[in-house]
Image 1 (cartoon, rainbow, N blue to C red):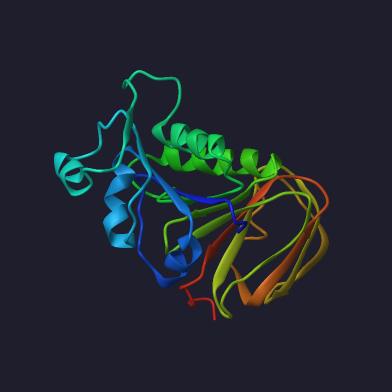
Image 2: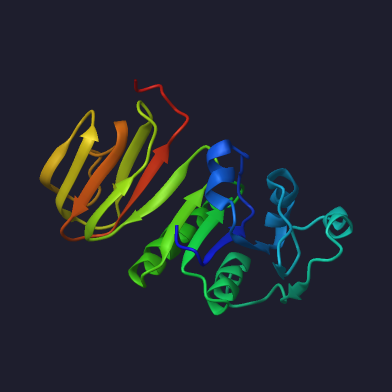
Length: 216
């Protein structure tokens, strides 16, 4: 992650793993509505708390009395998470960690976070979506290395047809592969350590489970 990094606390599931704590270390923090409930477990005090506060219990305000609030009406044109991301970008964010972006009661929100991540990556931002137990990385045309523990599970989910997909340092490597839209070919691979990826065209998400060694 780049120096100008922000962590956005969202309302999905979150486990305060060592890997998550290392990822957010030194970042600035903005909470979106009920995502504030994760702040204490992560030892964070956000610089801003945004939303309509319909999913924030009153005791959170008592626990964080000094965090400035930016309230929005319930009938608004954006989600609380999108508002929080916008505030981070307005403050110069180059890297975004969306903590609590996955799981939870609203599958539509989780899917929207993935689509937002791809859009933000296209704009040149470094993006990580995480629940602590799972991590999502946008994959766009180009090359990148993702540091995963040896033996951990990962999958690549195409949001469009993929061309020229290469996966190295994995149990099931690929070289210049064409992945049709909707194919399950790249589900359930196993990292042999940091994995190297390259893609010629298309949009995808890499879903990693860094603590899941069931494929080893």
